[in-house]
Image (cartoon, rainbow, N blue to C red; front, side, top):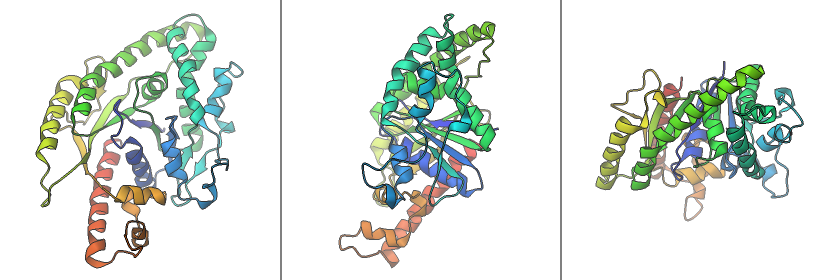
Length: 342
């Protein structure tokens, strides 16, 4: 059975998409079949996925595969009761076998209205809205089962809107990326209550589905881990004091308010007393270089350093070695996230 996972934080700029892509690459290299689903109308994951292909650089070139919006539109319009997974075309990465993408779509922002209405009307006798409410979860389960994906990794925007909560409530597990700053601290204070409210609303809607012969889904995602992202260090690998301050405050909020009784709760094995599953230092120039080539950060090759060099020359020796060290460190942290969702 496929495990559906999202990296989610209602604050932007916490490297959700970058981490999601690198996690997908890592899992595929461990022999897992991975489907990444771009549910963010900004489509950054889609751009990153196809960056390794030179044939898609022109803006007028049609991206391959079915978009998430095109797939769901027949249900939104009421033309189909259920979306058949057999009609969905996904793309395999040009460098990483067993890594697939259900691509994003700028038009998917329109789904906010359709899904928002389903959340408010599915509890009524409106069959159309009930079927719309369950369509995303059913499609993910169907496509995962039929095509043998071990993991379905969903990329969502930094919002609390209808698209995001539809995706999150459909997940089995959530990983929360965090940056040690004031805004992430404020986000964590609210996040547990927000997700718990979604879970409670889902229970009410689920009860209304059964009398109409519509099978509800579980809708009870668990917290699999948190990831401390993008913190900076001084020379000598000492973490900056300002980051330590906010990390401490965020830790306190994770322990006191993130997980709610009878609501959003931790996965068995997650230690809320030591909540950071992984700690990823600022990777600086490695991220944009990796993005240029559609590669994982830990998979940059020496020749790619030409893009970071002021004279266009490839890095060697003592200049290349720090890159290797940082890539190795990064991969170790991604491996910890993979272990947390296993």
